[in-house]
Image 1 (tube, rainbow, N blue to C red):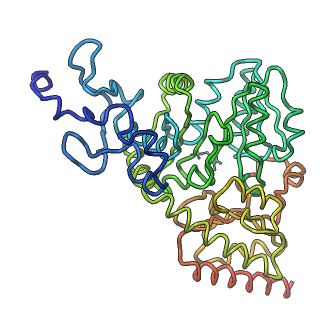
Image 2: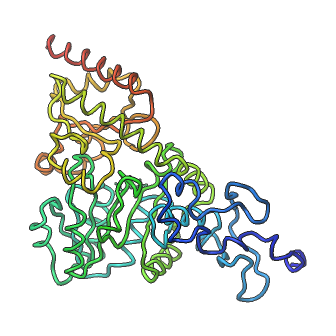
Image 3: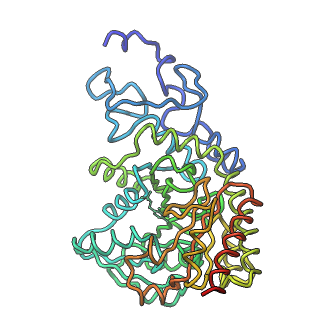
Length: 419
Ligand SMILES: *Cc1c(COP(=O)(O)O)cnc(C)c1O
């Protein structure tokens, strides 16, 4: 205790940065995304000058007196808050241009916290019908058991979405581009519908992040991120975030997080902070390569439909152009199901796996992998057929990726000729 009393305030961590981001909000709005990714909400460690926020690998914090904390951020116990996690939250909020962020162990932990905070038994949710499978399972199977009702609807159809609202609807939850069909829903119009119905509007922005798709300008109340994907971007952590401009909602969300114990771990928060420093650069590179590959596949005689928001032939192209700054790093395409197994087995560089948004290119067969829980007839209706492949375009050299895809197509098509 004596050491704490004798330490000068200047030598203690966070006496300068405090709980608010060091860069004032009006200034952050004029900075570019790459600058914000590196600097927003961050300052050299006041205790040591360390340029990166240290990993505060501690469960608890000494308190100088009853009801007092050393840091103005009020850290007492790392289930409630931790300086490394707070730095990540300030950085994510600064990048998004909102006042508050909360970081979680996984994307689904973030979504669970949102749902437990804003819903009670008897409440109704309108959710997109093509959203992350884990979100569907959570809403339908888990919260359904606690008396929450959910209607899954085609959120690209505004009339159908509006018709799904009931007096008990409390939340509109959407994802755009949708996984794995890349279907685009109109955030501005959905935001208006939610506002008119006094329904909270949450957007899962994992695919593009605020760097390529700002959602608060369209009326979102909460942005959801699985930082496991592009935000951390190196397949090294799982994590999630909730961002909002509403201090009261943020306080309620933080309470639920403390009550359920789903905060991000300091080490993972630090790795995520490091990942974010290159997020805009990485997203630009992912998107440029994805567009090249989408064009190549579209021109290939053995490839069926190619779904990519940056292709003019894509039904959501104009809408994507209006609300996204790029097409993103994910595309989907159709192959004859008879040649598809040979194709994925013949890829040398691109790996068959279930994740997306990392440096390595990954290919997924949604029907048998990520979306296998959905009954085949529903899958077919949603456009997730046996021939659909989802490609998360990584950061390898584009020429190498192109050679890999072309080589595998040659082998797979050869197998068709022989068959
Ligand atoms: C992966 C993902 C999630 C879930 O995130 P986890 O970190 O795996 O829990 C939620 N939404 C989308 C769009 C995702 O891709």
